[in-house]
Structure formats: C-alpha cells, structure tokens
Amino acid sequence: MPRNVYFSQAVRSEQNLYEDLIIESLKIYGQDIYYLPREIVSTDDLLGEDRASKFDDAFMIEAYIEGTEGFEGQGDLYSKFGLEVRDEVNFVISRRIWDRYVGIDADSERPQEGDLIFLPLSNKFFEVMFVEHEQPFYQLSNLPVYRLQCALYEYNDENNTNYTERDFDKFTPAHDWGNLNDIIAPIKQHVFRSHILKLDPGGFFPPHRDHRGRGINSFRIIVPLQNMRPPDFNFVIDHRILEWKYGHLYFLNTNMEHYLFNSSLEPSYMIVYNVGLCEETVDFVTMKLW
Image (tube, rainbow, N blue to C red; front, side, top):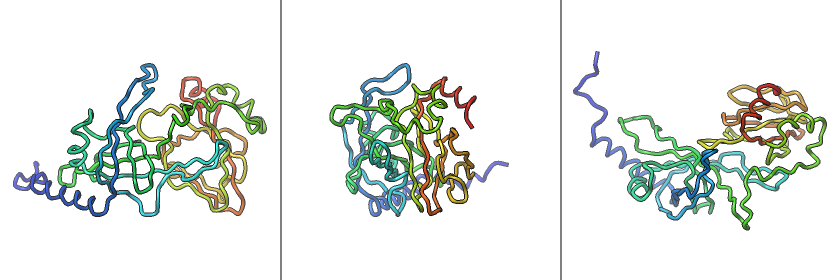
C-alpha cells in the first residue's frame, strides 16, 4: 500500500529552515578553516595515481570539529625515522556553504579525497581521506552537510627531497633479528618504511584506520616480539581480540577499524612492515602468513 500522499517529508520550506539552523550552528560552534581544492598536474596512467598536485586557491569557510578530547588517530609515534605525528580529525561542513564559496570555482561537484584543509587553530594542514555525504541520513529527505574524514598532511617536498614511502628501503640491523631476514626475503624488494613499535605500560591507540578512501597501494604485516598476548596486551580488530605467536608474521587488514592497548606493567614490542601492494606480495600473504 503506498504512503499517504497528504504528508511529505520533502517540504522545501522545512528543508531550508533545517539547513539554515545547521549553518547557524556551524557559525556559532565551528572553527574557521581554509579549504584548498587539489589540482592534479600529472597522473601515472599505469598505477592510476597522481604524480604531482598543486593547490592554488584557498577558501575560508566554517566547519565543526567532531570530538572534544583532541585529535583522533595514532597520535605521536616514535619510529626509527624519528617522531611521527599521525593526528586525524573529522570536519562537518555545510553543503550549501561549500557549493557557494568553493564548488562554484572548483571543477568537482563535491569535496574530493586529496583536497587539503588548513586549520588556523592548530596551524596544521589536513588531507581529506574520505567524504561521507549521507550523514545524517535523509532526515528531511535532503543531505545538508558533508563529513570530511581527514589525516594530518605529510609533506613530501621539504628541502627538495621529494621522498615517498617507497624511498625508505634500506634495512637496518634490526631486520636481522631472529629468522626475519629469511622469512621476509621473498618480498624484500617490496618492503618499505617499516619500524619497531614500542607501547609503554598504559599506552594505547584509539579506534582508527590506517588508510581511508582511494589510492591504497600498501598493506601491513605485523611481527609480535614481546608482551603482546591477552589479557596483558589487547589488539582488537573487527571486534576480535587477536592471539599471537612471537616471531611469526601476520597480515592484518588495518583499513578496518582497530585499536590496541597495553594494560600490563611492561612495554610491548612489535615490528610493523609496510609492504607494497602487488601480485607477488598478495601471493606471499595468501600462501605463507597466518
């Protein structure tokens, strides 16, 4: 039986009022940000990636920052390359405001993954990793906001170095621990930017994903080394607490939401391998790993 034609959730005046209230709330509780649309200079037709991008325009709009306890993500991480800051944040912006000030000059009809946001509050750039455009879900049969999932932007062109993740391919003495050298040998040429992760007593990583959006070209292999078994240490992914055998290699789909915490009185150690995604490494994972 069809719905009653005398009642409608798509009343234009109600939709406009609802959107006006959202915009007013963003102006009261939000923060000024600068939105920088990305312009792709050249693309890699083989891998489907952009070789170079530029950001020529910046538009000031208001955005609401989700979360009241600071940035999300893995926070500050110390690796063999030094201190890495992996902050993440979610911005909520008005669809109407974006169309009026940004979309009118941009080539796209909506915010795009790869665009940048500058937050004057923290003096940091964030990269848009994923654009959620259906939350809240059609409350009045319209979609008034975009929810932008962003990660701290990593510079690749400082001091004219132009480094990428794949440039970190020199192995250190830590690679010779145990029999790792023999185990990882079949895909050694595809391993890059890896590190030993130490999690101090009481340390934790809140729920997060290592990658979002498009352009995923790598995955993680974990090697548990010390103090990584429950209940002292818990690595939770897909609502499951993982069990480990020390010194073994494990493939984890860290694009799924996961978190970990050390509830013991001793530090926990693991090796995190970043591995390039290709047919050879996929065969290695499906045939060799746990």
